[in-house]
Image (tube, rainbow, N blue to C red; front, side, top):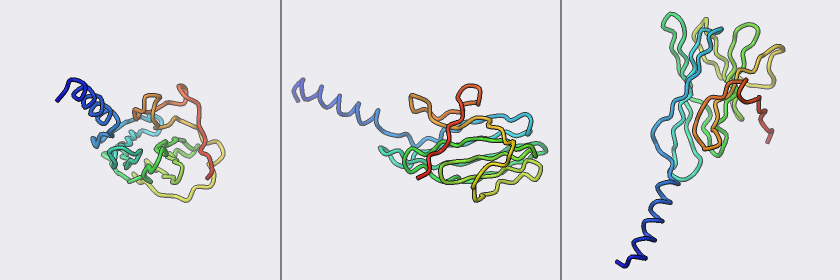
Length: 151
């Protein structure tokens, strides 16, 4: 094999490896002291090259509260989940195509038909990818709310 062929093979192999999605779960957590909850959304690639991910929400709270819920999968750059807290203490996890309501007192996560937030709901932050494509949590003070575009 010539030196040029080996160099070209190395470049191609490196491009493929760098362009591949890892199938290793990537959990990101946030503590919500006022709600006494810890939320974790784990993102896991389902395709080696396309932006396809499964998302799973885990909720941990006081008294051993622990529950999980599968979120609508990311089938093309729709992983972002915005978090809100209502004056009544409910936590909303809202995505492009789904919404979950977390009741920490009952330790439940409910899929809900989402039309609008209750008055007085406060934006807490969002789970999203950063500029380098890494799954992370952005508190409201670090990045302002980004509404979802209706499609």
